[in-house]
Length: 516
Image 1: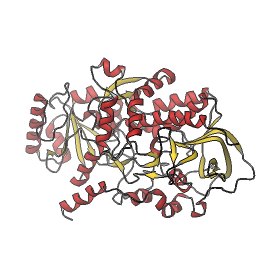
Image 2 (image 1 turned 45 degrees about the vertical axis):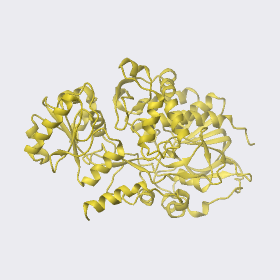
Image 3 (image 1 turned 180 degrees about the vertical axis):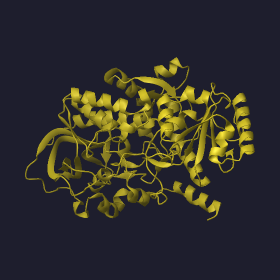
Image 4 (image 1 turned 30 degrees about the vertical axis):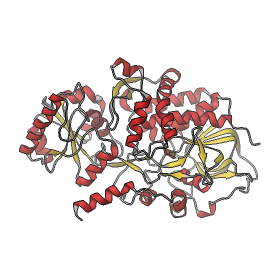
């Protein structure tokens, strides 16, 4: 295949499906997810003879969004239950990199960084190719600061550094302790426990149950479910007197479903997600009448490594180095794209290149910007390597030495004048030339990371149906919803999205009038 042909096929992803979505392919996909077509339902399901449990609000999923929704619903006076299909809580959130992007914060002010919700929204829309649903994107950009301060004052989360992610105009990524979302998840879990909300693990959603008016009134689940055995567990019925909140995440781990949306994403691409990110709850909502949007915009992380499984430690090494170090094609010894580009831009550039890239930095850049445990753990498994000289680094990765050294010198000249003449990479005020040994490097190859598409929601996190009317009794937040990010989600905005709309969903669900 010619290089131009490959490029044309890759860029054609921008022509996203305009007339069909997840619901249209559900009949093909659900067999793989353990939800046979017999579950396709119309308004007025046969109600269970008895409900095994009854709550005001039932939350599906125990990540950032689900836990935030449960907390807010409980604080609004509702009785709440959380169900989680996996044997452990937290979903993808607990392995998240721990960066929360928010504008105009105290930490930004302390570091002399001017920012505003308007600028964050502008960045989100530009990265999203203006496919973002504007009102929802605005709610996240303008609500992020308040959500961050809520995690500090109400949950006790601590943010220890301010960093940068590709595609943003300024540094606005608030890093948690140890650079992991577990810091926030564990604080949410502690609050959930304090409020007396129980999390039912190994409890998998099978389908939504609606009454004759088309209102979602409960769910069928399988208790004692043992992922991924679809025959495991026993049937039970949970009644939701006010509403259900869906915070079940995306579908990056379901290869068949993601290939329906993007045929390139075969099993040759790993995923950063936890194994349970398989999307069946999203499809169950579509079968129940919920509308989906932009399902084929699937994000690959450009900072992942083929030398470690899952998310790993290289992302925590790579992202702090963008704008502080070089990204090299080892075949040519040259840079090939701007290091501070957004995730899609960089991932597509690496895929088009056809081989893993190298991200590198000297001891100054690494010691100043990268958390020590990420470097240590990455080196222990061999995904991050340390070299005494640039010559040693080039030899290890079989990089043409002369070209490589000239490229380093050229990069250093850009750093000195704070302007990249080749790719317009953003170079920060405190960036220094790459010259101080030892040098650190890692290989990069994209992995499936985030599914931007999902259920259509309004400003109240109410799920909308294919009739363009609200699906009564159903709310959604986080990665299971779509439209907030458009074509590309900027790094660090996932937490903002989950927390802002998770809190909105919880309050909205608790405010619903009981149906019976």
